[in-house]
Length: 78
Image 1 (cartoon, helix red, strand yellow):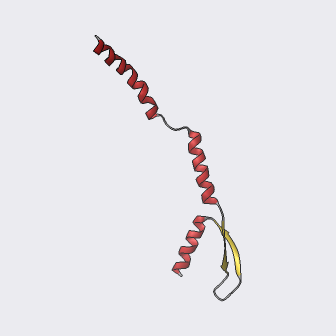
Image 2: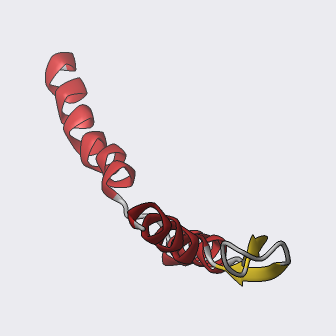
Image 3: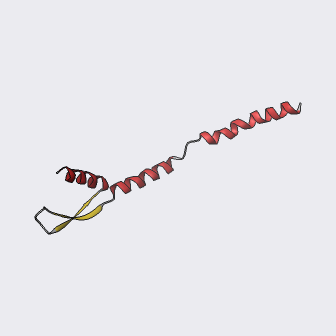
């Protein structure tokens, strides 16, 4: 009798304990993380670069991280 009671109690408690493991995170947390990554990607990085190879004068250019990556790739190709 005692063994069947403990098995029945365990069977009743197990589904309750398993529910939080499958719960999805709140949507607010996801949106905050994506907003932070978007802000980091859109953040401007300013550098001083030469206008052309013959000029000693440098101009200030501000671009996002992705724009700088493409700019540097283009400079390596030339």
